[in-house]
Amino acid sequence: MVLKNLKDPEINKPNRPEMEDLDDEEIEDLKIIYHQELKDHVKRMSTLKENKRISYSLIIGQCTPNMRAKVESHEDYEEASTNLDPILLLKMIKSIVFDFQEKSISILLCLPCMSNLLILNSIQTHLSRNTRRSIKTL
Image 1: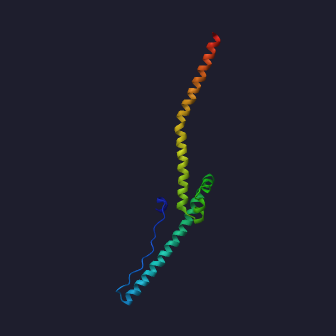
Image 2 (image 1 turned 90 degrees about the vertical axis):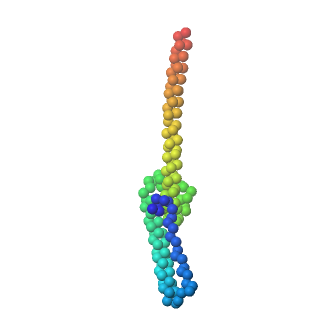
């Protein structure tokens, strides 16, 4: 889900429990619970960091040499590679692909115009030849 949305997950640190108006036993229980939640939080953050590292390696490993060269020339590459950030890497790939698609679409939109220009040029060449022939025959 994280890679699909291209956003880091929110893993909130547990809040310290309020210990006002509690007896010693309840305070001790809340401390134990809080420390366990804190350990779980640290473990989740560690797992997230490891999963991001693995995801980065998998994504960059699937890139073609040409795509990898484009990624490495991107302005955000240094940050992404230093932090092994798969989300930033995917954003970079997405921008490269969409930029390519926009340029391809622009070229495709120009093709009919270019075709018409070639036809007009051909007609003009044909007419000028016919005009030269008619002038020679006079």
